[in-house]
Image (cartoon, rainbow, N blue to C red):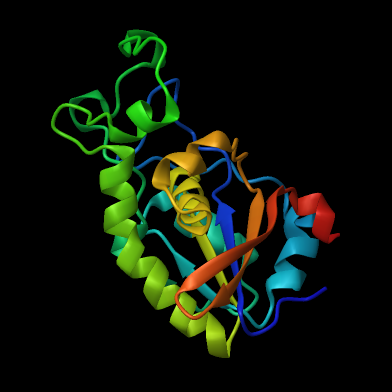
Length: 194
């Protein structure tokens, strides 16, 4: 079923060319698949407002999915800020050990933000997107953290969004209603729209 007014689709960007490093706020390019792999999803999204995080990996993905090239950027859609660990090699990251989702959501990275902080930063942007989506379907190209924060909002607590694995180029579909979100589908691959 094609997107309709009330639909908000959040697409995680194509795989990041991160070179084995954590790239929350580190701006890295996307590794885009061939155009044929994205053609069905691009056609499905035609007619939707296209909004992207300003990150290069998100803008490249949005351009590959936008039929008319009309893409707005929203600064608040940036991924979580991992502070002094952003850009560090995955093997050099500290082992946080066993943590509950709630503890992980509240863990603030030195010089950065916690997942809860990011969800709070993102919440006004989600509220604005919900309003826009009432009149026209909205496709957002952003980060795994953005998708998880929206899922957490729909489920009533940011930490609940951390239960989901969000693959690159996957689509999570919401139905918007007066200030809220209902989850219609999580982690749909581009091939689901072929």
